[in-house]
Image (cartoon, rainbow, N blue to C red; front, top):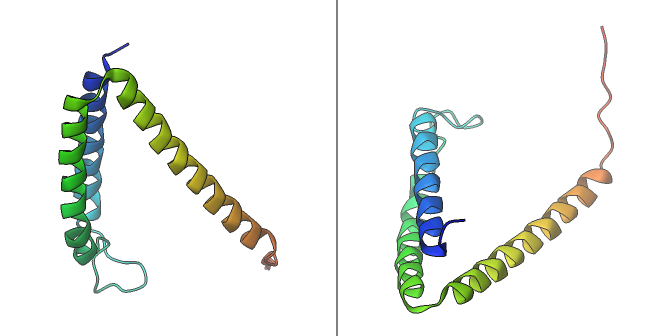
Amino acid sequence: GLPVQLAVATSKATIFGVACSRLMVDITQRHPVYPKQTMIDFDIALLLEPLTLAGGVFGVLLTKICTETMIVSLLVITLGATALKTFKKGMEQWNKEKDMPMPTSTSH
């Protein structure tokens, strides 16, 4: 496989490419409920982007300081915690939807 630093860089490049293509698609879209609003909430983007950039800088510094084993361990811990949180949220949503009555279809 790839060395960890190269794998992380390749992953970031891939994510950047997907984000750019998604932006090109979504930039022209309108909100389905509020047609005067764009699909992208630029106020939220302005709020989150500095944190994203700071995280990127912090990550670059960590990859320079840490060994490959430490980087892989941090990635496993981070991804594991994120997966667990997502799973719990998904189960919570599933339980909520499970208790909702099913809509009845009317055939004409």
